[in-house]
Image (cartoon, rainbow, N blue to C red; front, side, top):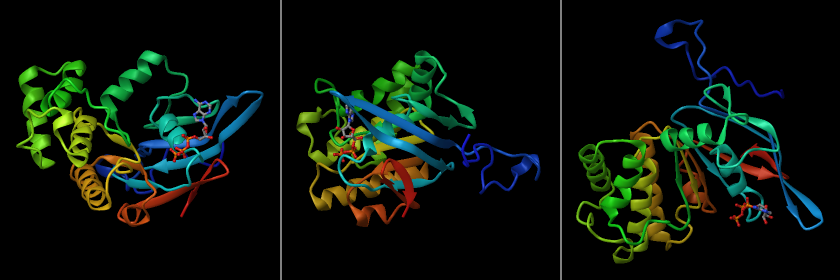
Amino acid sequence: MSDVDTHTDPQDDGGPGGAYEERPPLLVLDGVVRRYRQGEATLEVLAGASMVMNAGESIALIAPSGTGKSTLLHVAGLLERPDSGEVFLDGEPTSGLSDDARTAIRRNQIGFVYQFHHLLPEFSALENVVMPQLIRGLAPAEAKSRAEDLLGYLGLGKRLTHRPAELSGGEQQRVAIARAVANAPRLLFADEPTGNLDPTTSAHVFQTLTALARASGLSAMVATHNLDLAATLDRRVTLRDGVLVEV
Ligand SMILES: Nc1ncnc2c1ncn2[C@@H]1O[C@H](COP(=O)(O)OP(=O)(O)OP(=O)(O)O)[C@@H](O)[C@H]1O
């Protein structure tokens, strides 16, 4: 175990349970190492990355292309396992969990947004947002109502029946954001969510994403190349030689 304390939240004043009750931070990365084989060589993309993410925090991940931002988001979001080190969720280690247990955590607690929307082309905006809720087991009427609310909040109330190809790039990304938060996750990972959009649309979609995260108390980690947008989040980190550094 390295110097990262996985069990106390520095912003936790003890809460209603009393001053001696300690709540672990939402997410802790502790000395995370991730290597890829590239032919004969091994590339160590993450070389002991550590960080603490508290509930409700928004963090920008800013680093040059190829330094490991996507890899970090995939490991933190339980899509990939670290080669060594640990990812703690609510103070509990996750790397030893079965694939099924990790999938269940992702489905119920984690949302992802990517640079390209990955919406299902043959389904409407509404259906794309309803679907993950049905997979989770929600009743169709409840799922539809939540999807309508979310899309309305994101300014897409008049685009519910449009298929992705009938929407603008910014609208497609907003549907992807609605889909990512449809199951009310606690954590949102966004990998250059506005990287494919023009500057004005990019700023609008980014602000929509962060406003939604704040309104719903969601913790968000957003990889972006845009320093102005990064400045609007609570904290900024970068990757230097595979290690996370606060900037
Ligand atoms: N599955 C893989 N197999 C082999 N190498 C990989 C794999 N995934 C990523 N890499 C390598 O790891 C390095 C980091 O990749 P990653 O996609 O995490 O970077 P990034 O910072 O997100 O880049 P970008 O900003 O261009 O998206 C790159 O050199 C990439 O080629």
